[in-house]
Length: 638
Ligand SMILES: Nc1ncnc2c1ncn2[C@@H]1O[C@H](COP(=O)(O)OP(=O)(O)OP(=O)(O)O)[C@@H](O)[C@H]1O
Image (cartoon, rainbow, N blue to C red):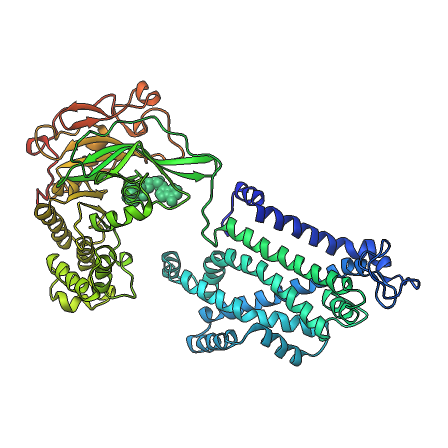
């Protein structure tokens, strides 16, 4: 299980649910431990002057027919009630875990048999199972523990099975398998630790239910037997005289409810901390604004204006700001490339523009406008229509971009049904037409197919086709060609270029590959550690990169002329983590031209030529070798 920072537990305790459940649980545990030690004698002493009496100053919840104090009996019964519930839960969790994970270590036919047995058991209501097992194991405490425990087991087995199956498909398990790790070790080392958290949460909640079931069994007379007593037995005793002394039944009933609540609410609070349920956290204060890096240029007809954009996430020691004051403008029909190494903030910038940053992430900007509308100030409902028809997003992994259970045509058609009010058949006809427009052969037949029946390149085309269902003014493509081979990559870039030429659609192409970007875009934004460090055209007189980072990126680009005998060029060092940024220029550590000033003072993005901005104290304007010294790579322009 991953270690949680102490801060998140403390924060959970400060919430009303967390605080209340923790207090209640501490009280229940304290009573279970101390109850029999402190009040055993009082619970067993007979007051012959007060037989079967109602509440009084001496006996707060009255007495039973032998004159024993009900209040103290309820307190003393806490230990047996809680211990039995916990024992039953433990039994249920352990046997459920064994049943749930056995199929992954047993030979396949036996494993299937176990799975089928679990499926059948899950189909029965747990109360029915409790009664069934009680009959089998017989009346008494032991039988009741076994009955409640085994009745809980199937739901844990199912939970463990489902979670183990989802983990078993992950890459790290495959990697361990390839390394020859055996099945049992795989289960113990790689699968169980990753399903531990949800199991603990569910076990805590199940303890509350076990307490209730146990009290139910004792109440029916098939659980704890005299002279022992738990809350269920006290409830049973109290019910006989309920018209004389209602408190005799109410007191143990209240104890069951409060202890059940303590377990259930604690489970909820733990779930909030370990993230079993996705819950928006509300950090104490908003992230502090970072120093402005540059202003966006003003254009009246701009499709997208990003001015001083910041994306922040709450971390252990405060906010981390992976995007720090990014500013740029995109005009109609313009193709802008965003490049940079992994972690430079490219994707977050694209996601912020598409309003896809989820809480607890926070997006702020002086201006973030798409098609003249503020993306931060306009109500969600108003924006949905605009973004649905005018903004298209193409992601890196085309397989996960489509819903695998729905036909491609229907998924495309949904856009027009939702945003353009087209009928089902008209929307589908448009979907087929759009698939044709992105050059998908046999579009009508293909529209009836599922995503897995498409090749990677076709899925990316279909994704662009989905964007074209509306009338996109901007396409944001985040690493759209990374998963594709070079030929398909070229086709896709050509399709983007054609779409742009035909419809005057602007394109923001995010890539780590400066060669890909320079082939498709006329302007390149180079990002490093959450900032734009250079903004330059990809061709023309101002296309000589001046930032040492851009020059280093270009130097590491391989092309047909690269000397295969020489070692592969790399940029030494690694980019800084967003929560550990140095003072001054973030690239200084890796920069051959860095001086003392670079290490103390952060450069701002400044104009060095028309349409060329650089954030560097020592820009290098010596033209690079190659055609006109510009960023034209082996692929050439499309
Ligand atoms: N939800 C998140 N919570 C905290 N930090 C995040 C979150 N998402 C991204 N980051 C951090 O923000 C930084 C920038 O991420 P981003 O995905 O924008 O990088 P990128 O330049 O697109 O890299 P890549 O090419 O690898 O996708 C990374 O250091 C990442 O760890």
